[in-house]
Length: 91
Image (tube, rainbow, N blue to C red):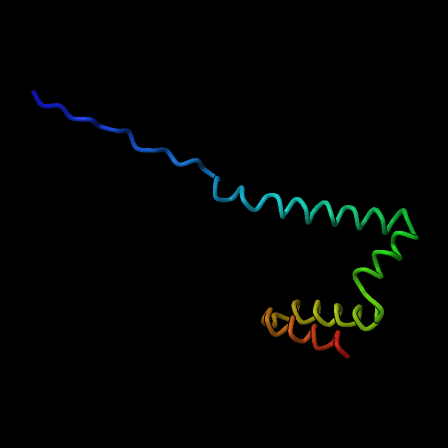
């Protein structure tokens, strides 16, 4: 007497591949919320964050960020825009 075993196909869990990127996204969102709240309600904390994000040459870095934003708006290649940003920060 012969017999045959048939297995049902394994169902894939939808969205399982996408769940891996949730933690970094949530971390970034909460950091932005934190930075916004510090900026609005805690002047001393705002100065500390500015020193961390824009060390020593705050005006040079801020100008470089403006140039980066303008380059991105104009449709320049991301690699070239970031290269220009880093070169502007070094000046």
